[in-house]
Every structure is written in structure tokens, then in C-alpha cells.
Image 1 (cartoon, rainbow, N blue to C red):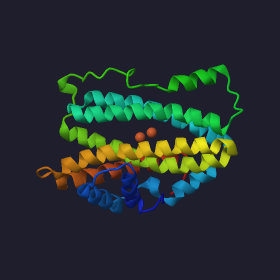
Image 2: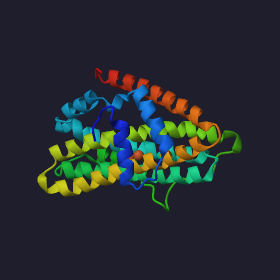
Image 3: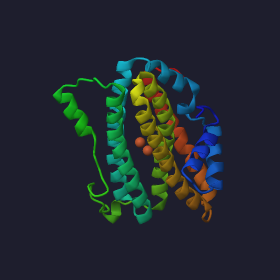
Length: 256
Ligand SMILES: [Fe+2]
Ligand SMILES: [Fe+2]
């Protein structure tokens, strides 16, 4: 996947792999927003810097643990978000998303062991790594009960939050391609086939997360007078997301 202003086309291409239906309005909205505010994470400098940093095996090992932690934290946050959604269908889809992110958290640790087979971690570190993984399953997960009505998110607020989740998922997809290159750079040859399977599965899941929210957006933007309003909302949330990403990168001394 190219990390350039072609990102919108690439995202739409990825959706075809997960048998997405056609989203004419969403396609136009995504292209417009990406043309107006180029996503910071799609800039080539972002991928270049990741490739440079990931040459260092220790940095990359830590990065895999950090990704496990982020996926685990994301799973819990997304589950909490599902409890706030008034719309049952949105909540069901968001819960499925949380189950996937929980699985990703564990997958990143499996990949760590495949890339560095002789890794000797002390008991303390192993137990911290274990605690970071929520290990949700379809039968073992947090409560699905909704929060009281006065704390719930109704359609407009739900869509607004989902746009933020959606942009994070596009960034996660871009990141998976960078991780894939680094995995294969550091792993012993005999681990490559399994790592490629893990990576394919992560990429497919991130595309699915982009897909279910795109479907919700297409339906929302197609109704009544929502289209223009949704155009603006998507653009505004992308602008906010870019500002936050810039602050994160400055903190890590990455110049754009
Ligand atoms: Fe994920
Ligand atoms: Fe995801």
C-alpha cells in the first residue's frame, strides 16, 4: 500500500478485499477529506522514519510489545464505547470490533516470539505482558448492558465518535504494512510463513473495521439532509486527528 495522497484510493482498494459493498457517498467524502487535509500518517516521511527506527531489533521488539498494549487498551475502550451506543446494531458491530482488537493484542505477542525465538523475559515482564491482553472471547467478555439513557450516545454523537474510530483504523491499516516489512526483516526464515499469515489476518481485520463503519456512514449520509453535514464532520475530525498526530510526532522528535 502506498503511503501518499493516494491513500483514499488504497483504502477503497482494501475494502474490495473484504467484499465490501459500494459506498459512493463515503468514497467521495473520504477523497475530499484526504485532499483537503492530507493525513499525517500517510506522508512518506512517516514510513521512512518507521523503517529507520525498526532497523534496530531492540526498538522493534519493544514496538511489538507497545502494539500489544495499544490493541489491548483499544479493545477495552471500544467495548466501553459499545455500552454507550443507543443503537443496538451499532453496538453489536462495535463489540465485534473490540473482540478483534483483543485478539490482536495477543497476536502481537505471538509475533514477538516468532521474530525473536530465543527471547528470555523475566517473570515480571511476562506477567505485565500477560496483563495487557484482555483475552476477550465471544463467550467471555465485559458486560453488554447499556449505560443509563442520560449517558447514552444517540445517532449524531455516535457517528461523530465512529468517525474518530474510523480514522484510527485507517492509520492502523497503514501501520500494519510498516510492521510487516520489519517483521520479515528481523525474523528467522523459518518464521516467515507464519508471520505472513498473522500479518495478512491483521490487515484483513483492520480493513473490516474500516468497512463496517464505512457502511454505517454511507447509510447515514444517504438519509435526509445529512450529506453536507457529514462531509464537514469527517473533514473536521480528520483535521483534529492530524493535529494530535503532529503533537505525538514532535514528542518523538520526528520532523514532518
Ligand atoms: Fe487492531
Ligand atoms: Fe482495528
